[in-house]
Length: 215
Image (cartoon, rainbow, N blue to C red; front, side, top):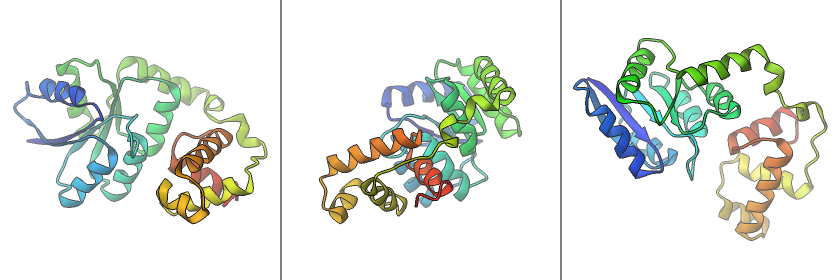
């Protein structure tokens, strides 16, 4: 029996995926989660899973951030990103985070099942359009690297302070308390930090800031 978990912030889509998998007797959906944090809590209780079908864009903790954490803590669990997006940036970040496959949500039950089996057998499930984009990214790595990486990144003193707090894993409200700011001001600073660093997640922001000796 293949033990699978589904992570998506849309219950309708969770049910749609469960229905697709219900055609196959050897697949058991052990649990579902609405975001990455909820999944991590469930994995702490029981990480006896073969594979996770992971959405990318979720509140609290995105699919890419969650994938990175799951791969560090539970490397035996395979992860397929199951998403509505096939843009280059999502693909590249998902692969960097350790995703084992990348399929679109519109996939039919048979292809989803075969993608799961292929991934568990050591392959990498990808639908054709994503495979083409991945090849393009590999052939033209310069497209992936941000030209801004070569530039001096200039953050304000306050932005650096916010980023340092963020690197400790603190929430927006705790950071706001520490720096005597409102949570909405902290959120605005973080938006500006993301823009300046050209990143889309806390993990990426902290990593890039460390790489550039900002924090």
